[in-house]
Length: 413
Ligand code: AMP
Image 1 (cartoon, rainbow, N blue to C red):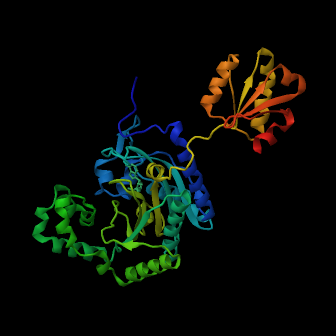
Image 2 (image 1 turned 60 degrees about the horizontal axis):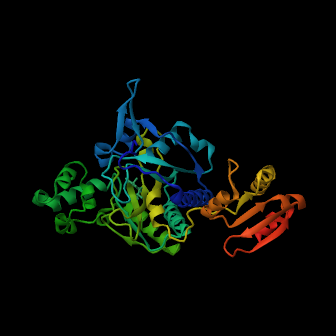
Image 3 (image 1 turned 180 degrees about the vertical axis):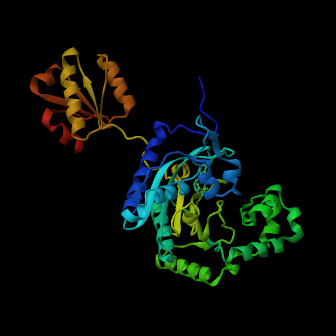
């Protein structure tokens, strides 16, 4: 046996119903909010993420599955979707085609992280992006849509957290204030934070090392350093959230792991998920499209982790669709008619199983029980002669003969 790769998972039959439901709800919510689906390749040029996600991020520095292909190109398995969607938006001038540049995508991402519950090396995201709208009304709508998505999945006990990390005008002042407040104490922090102080000081707020927390608690808050335009944008965003009746709290520590965020950042956290509790996260990125060679367009979006949503879905979501019926043929003569019956019921939308290999009626019935089919449809000599089928309801054991044409109606009642 050759086992699967560490940090990857098979989504097995017992679980796949949850995934199909998540994908269905995602496509449905996206369509209702005016998003068009885009499917981009899982491989991209390495520089797309170095430039887009950011050279100083953990993702690019430590977690990319990057390699040189046979043609000598540096390729990477995408670690996130935003740069790919920006690339597709620019490369195909989608702005010209769509009334609103609202795009979504669903698919696997790859990061060489330390695997644990809710964190994998191949995982799946729903990615939602809007390009070209600066108005805080879209910040409100995107966050409201993310909340609706979670609510329609039936995930309960979640928490919405928002923040503003400022823009190119005010962020440098905030970073400087942060480093000044840190002063000599930087040497008391963990190794990672010492590195972050040099490369990307805001990421210090992400630190989970307990010993670092007293120092981090005393650091300044980005909200107090916003320029006037960013202050107004943040105030307006919160007004929209209030108008939608969403409850949220502002956390100055929500800086997110990627370099490109400007102004609004947000996350929806789930209960009972342990350390990896972010169901989805996103924010505004007003410079990324231009930075990746496109027109100067603002952007905002979020990515939701499907593995974490699958973990958070309530138990009542049926995992395996139970068959409506299992057709049992009694004796060799009954098989042709039994197969036609299965075909006709399937064509009429029912979930129907039937056996193969001419097995005995006893073996067929055993398999029917294992399948948890709601009905057994029995065809023997008598039934064939009278154009009837014996319908047995498995739960009650109740059995009746019905005309072949009436089977669908009987199963539906
Ligand atoms: P990010 O792209 O890092 O902003 O993450 C967005 C969302 O993707 C998170 O809130 C998680 O739900 C999910 N996610 C990120 N990394 C992983 C991972 N390694 N395994 C599973 N889910 C992940």
